[in-house]
Image (cartoon, rainbow, N blue to C red; front, top):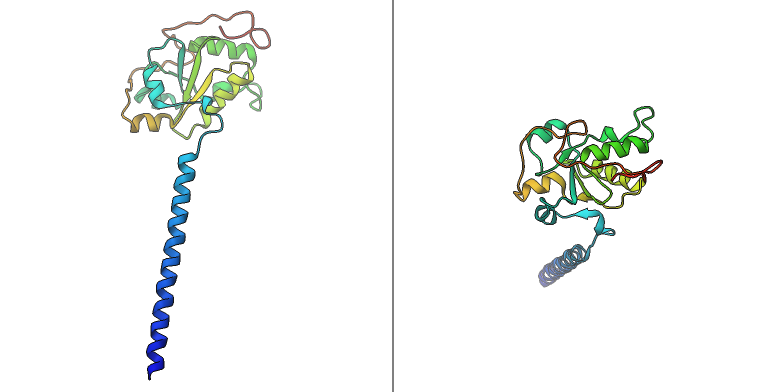
Length: 192
């Protein structure tokens, strides 16, 4: 039965060719994914602060770091010099659909040590939604010098960057840098 042996050889050949085609497609897919990842850039990289950059600017008085995690998490450890701010502070207490009114926002930013010339860097440990909210409110009121820490607290820890463990500096507690409100606040002035 010579035809059976040629049929078996043909099936083996088809399987081998199928495996090679599959391996080739897989290799091309992987290389394409790697190339896309390598070429990927952020649409607005100026809105992000990288952890290495922030680590180099921890003592820069023009930088204000805002920890948007819970006060309990902040007390356990935070980026040196950071102040704590809960996301609820950005909402209007009378109507939570809206952001905090301009005069209250100016007062809050002043209490946090944010001036018109400050670059604000916000971070959290939940993917960046709360510091993005801070960025949005700052931008809404005309303060364009705001960034979100790329990777947030989790990346900062993973990279074994310096942390600080001390009592909370919140919007209601005194801080080491103060700012004055000027006459230019949105709706009556700006932070500064």
